Length: 167
Image: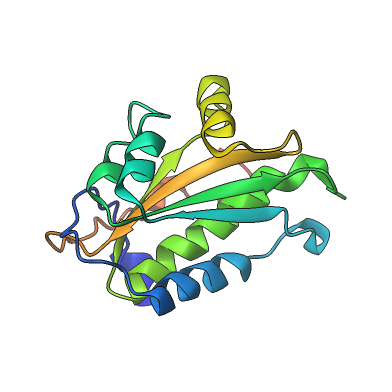
């Protein structure tokens, strides 16, 4: 999968709108992620309006890419029916990574902007989107066509691989 080796964090976008069919493909990829006991604890908010994206960017000091992106996607935890509550972070991380890889596949750029586990960010997102008690924000993803194509850095490091036991 070349997308794994081409994915980079993109923070600057052309402003060109992301087509509706591409948005659907991003969400389909996200929901195709594995989850503990198939609990699928995710929901999403698609944020296309510029003022809503600007408000979302205010949730975190690192979320400014949302201002220039034509699309924001908020990954939500729906926590009221978790069969394996200790696994929701893995579930939502796999979901988010699938979305990022699909973005590369579609010729888009994206960046993962953390909301969980920062209480102030979670509270701000909960207020911004009027989320019910059992729903909280996990991450925001800024998505769009990249201003420039960055070459990904290969991160494989043989010294981090151990066989049978840790040295």
